[in-house]
Length: 321
Image (tube, rainbow, N blue to C red):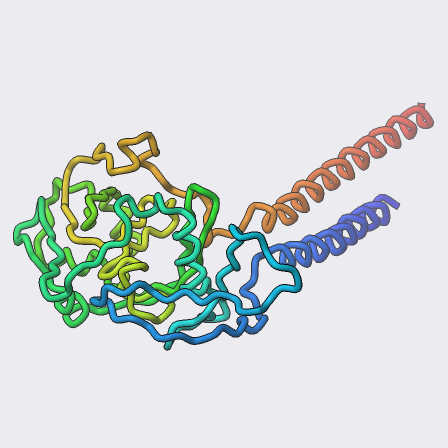
């Protein structure tokens, strides 16, 4: 009889596990973000200026005539378009079109502290200075021709509430530093731009996350409006760490260095916790909850079983007596 009861209890627990775990697994799978399988929207192609041209990227506006005449101060919304060679999907991930990104930063002029920078390719040099054995000045072509490049999708999250998910192609900073002999006292990389903007990142973060300086966005070479010649891809950091128009990387031991916005009150630690690469908490919550529920049920079943067993023994003792 006791064996039969135990079998019933075990069967009940197994039944509960069989029901709860599959349900939680299905719920979890549904809540994990998946790359969109929808085809990207179609955009109009336009001519693309070279990085050294001073002309700004053209903006296309809608040409439909509204039925009612708009107010004189009402401007039509720019229509997204694609540059030649631009991709808007990469490995099943939808990307923000460059034109949308440009329109967004145009609506936030404080992103560029002195406006768009137009840098002469023939005189440009990327300086590697500070705590290195061999300070170096790389030309634009030196960087592109002498170092391996990598491609990755990363989202730039701005503290003002907007973000852009883009395909970045660039050169890992650790490769630029490797042959120069970095001092063991170095802790920080300070990045400087042509407009006087600056920011910094821990050296360990840059090395461990294989941080790159990008020269392409969505498979299109950067333009002055998108940060030519190099754009720092500071993954999992807020946008004020993503420096454009990069001209110098200073290897330093000043871990308290404050860049442009940091010296104006922004935190030096701009890490976006759990951003992009980590699944959201709600994705793993059902499994954790299921384990807790099953554990509680098992404890209750064991407690009830022991209580009944004790009562049965007490009754048997009374009968014997």
